[in-house]
Image (tube, rainbow, N blue to C red):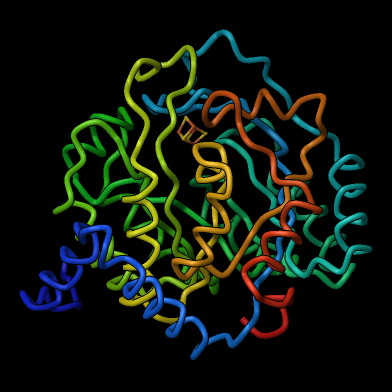
Amino acid sequence: MKLPVDRDPAVREMLTGILTAAPGRLPAIFEEARAVRSAHSGRKAYLRAVIEFANNCRCNCLYCGMRRDNRSVERFRLEADDILKAARLAAREGIGTFFLQSAETEEYDAEWLAGIIREVASMGMSVLLCVGVRDEADLDLWREAGASKFILKHETSDAGLFASMKPGLDLSDRIGWLKTLKRHGYGIGSGPLLGLPGQTVESLVEDLFLMKDLDVDMSSVSVFLPAAGTPLESSPTGDVDLGLRFIAAMRIFLRRTLIPATSTFERLRPGGQLACFDAGASVITVNMTPPSIRDDYELYSRRYFVSLEHARSVIAAAGLTEASEGADA
Ligand code: SF4
């Protein structure tokens, strides 16, 4: 694969320096990251609402509680009415982006999802998808229905680690799929899972280069937390401080991307999402999956579910103003 971004040794050194910075250097690094954010989006923080609507995954990722071989998870698929009820609530609250997320599954067809996308778009919200790899025809159908953004996490830029964590899948296919999404007119998002066993700082730097290569619109990092019933259930959690450094590195290197403060930070450290904003994040996502089933969307065990009140309090504490990414980001 041709890599358009020059792996300039000075840039590599700069990024490595951020990821390995001594604690005393962090306030200045985070201040620089906030200055970059401010130059691109002023005082704005973007609020999203997510609904996780199906968890029966055909994949078998070692780190994920919804992996195919985990028999201890109840499988579900929400009805369209439940999804649209949550969307109406989000619209009433003035949330600009509705995020439809599912495991990689064939349990619903593309037309069914297109109908939901059409309804949500008609409520005036922009629609973000994270539903894994599907047919290219589905991408067109959903794009025409009103979806404009698509997240497909690459998880790690280390091809060997990727293959061992995602059996049967291949990093270069995933990168190719991100390019396909772009070709079909989507704004794309990607990012690593930080703290996978065997991951190195060098590979995290490559994650940053890869996202630059792909010219992503949204970049994110989640911190690894073990999920019960998976081969990694006894592995140590990822390092929150390294995660915050990674956010700052994304902001300083990628500049304009939307960067979420993911729930894994709050789960691992109370105040973790505010710390993400202090390191340059610009998005927070409210979880609108019905409480009766959301524990079964088990990306990791004992998830932290972001409420609207919590999200708004984090934005206020960060000194930012709630805004809609649909209109201007
Ligand atoms: S990480 Fe995604 S693709 Fe992998 S098992 Fe979990 S839901 Fe499926």
